[in-house]
Every structure is written in C-alpha cells, then in structure tokens.
Length: 90
Image (cartoon, rainbow, N blue to C red; front, side, top):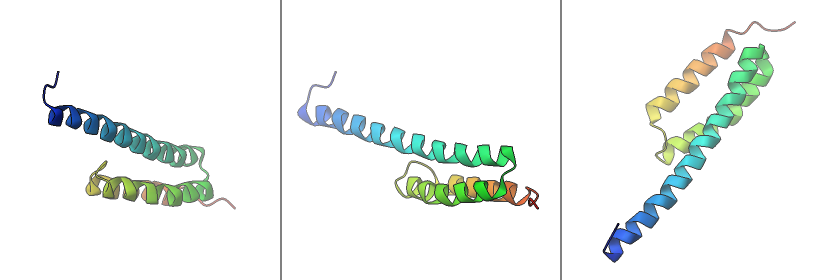
C-alpha cells in the first residue's frame, strides 16, 4: 500500500488511465470485429464502409498511445487487402 501522498495520487492516475485505455482498446476491437464479420460474410461494400469507420478509431488509438503506429498500419493494410480480395457482386 502506498504511504506518501504522491504515491497515492499516482495510483489514482494509473487507475484512471488504465480504465480509459481499456475502453479505447475495446472500442477499436468492436470496430475491427464489424469489418471482420463483413469480410467473412463476403459483403464487400459493407466491409469497405466498416473499414472507413474503423480507420479513424485505429488512428486515434495510435495517437493516444494505446496501439503502436506500425500495428495500426499493419492491421489497416491487411484488412484492406482482404477486402480487395472479395469478388465484386454482380
């Protein structure tokens, strides 16, 4: 248990930051799940729309330090490649 006031404050700050980061990471995963489901169902237009919605969330997580920028770039690249591979419905 923390003894000094500064250590107690640090514990409070860490708990607050952890909760915020957990919420951000959860939000990103939800957006990614929507893209994955659309890809799995073979719905190209829906997958593209979901990716466009997910992209700013991923970039925000990157800028806030929740995810590394290379991780975000890799995820976006792989998802867009998988969407391109879906045959266009006629």
